[in-house]
Structure formats: C-alpha cells, structure tokens
Image 1 (cartoon, rainbow, N blue to C red):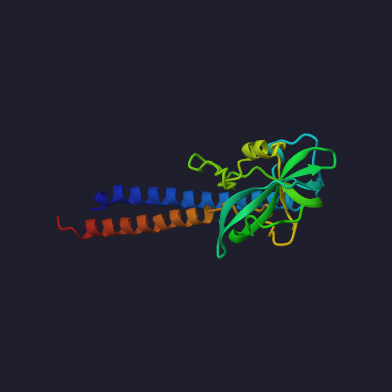
Image 2 (spheres, helix red, strand yellow; image 1 turned 60 degrees about the vertical axis):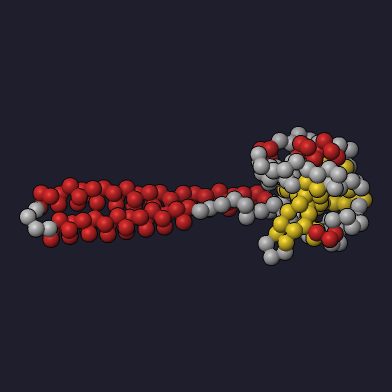
Length: 222
C-alpha cells in the first residue's frame, strides 16, 4: 500500500510547490507594479515645464504648461463615464506663444452640451503630454458629418485641426461647464493580487485532491 502512495504523494507535493511558487511570484510582481505606478504618479504630478521644442512618446505623462490661445475649432470624442453616462471629450487646437499648434484635451461635457458655446481665447493650461491607447482595430471611423470621434486618434486629429501630433490633457478647468479628466493611473491595471489568489486557491484544491486520492488508495481493498 505504501508503495502505491509514493507516486501520488510526490505528484501532490510537486504540484503544490509549483502553485505556491507561482502565487509568491505574483505577489512579487504586485509589489513591482505598485512601484512602477508610484513612479508614474510622481511623474504625472511633478511641477510643469514649458512644452519642449522636440516632443516624442517617451515624454508620456510629462507635466507641461501650455500658454497660448484656444482656437474656435473643436473635435468631439464620444465617451461613457460610470454613473454619469455618455458625453464628449472636447479636443481643440492650442496655439502656443511660440507659434506652434498642438492638441488640447479640455475635458468632458455631457451629451446635451456637445455643441454649446465654450470659452476660447488666451489661456494658461497645466496638463500632461499623453499618447492615449484609445484606438484599436474595432474602433469605428469618425463621423465627420456630425463631428463625432470614437477615440483620440492623435495623428488624424492633428491633421484635421492642422496641429502637431501632440496632445496636452488639461489638469485644471479651461472653461465653465468643462470637467477636466486629467491623466492618471486608473487605466493601468495591477491585477497580480487576483492572480496570486488564483494560484493559492488552486494549490488548496490540488492539496485536497491529493489527500482524497491517498485516502482512496488507503481504504481500497486489496
């Protein structure tokens, strides 16, 4: 009988060991991801600088001060917010004091305020450079007739408004009725605790199945 129990015991111990290791590894990954998110948060909330002369995606999250004039044109990005519902992000051209034109994400308005008049003119905007990942293969093309976009497609929006493909997401309000949606870490998941719980739960199941098998072997009649 003891010989028959050696192999399932070995499989049970090895299986539990692997699952415990995977769960522990996920806990380490959770701490690592938390550190990364803390670094990004510190970068987002740092003191703003003037928009650099040369900008590239490695500057994602860089806090900037955009001084200039908001143009009359607008692009409207359809979004949905929890507990609020549908509305639009207002994307406008911002002509900086050095003459460069960039995109400005002014923030959110509700669905009924899509075409309402909004303050324009000279502003001093604190925000963050951003390259959002709104677009994927299933994102519909914009409805240009109704000026409704379904994602912040930076190159296409820059072409439509005649700006550089640079987006500043406002941190503070740029006008009454516009709620800024500043750049944050909310869209960056840290699900490693859930993964760890999954592996540890599987370990308990594996351990229970091993005990059950050993009990069956022990009670089986020769």
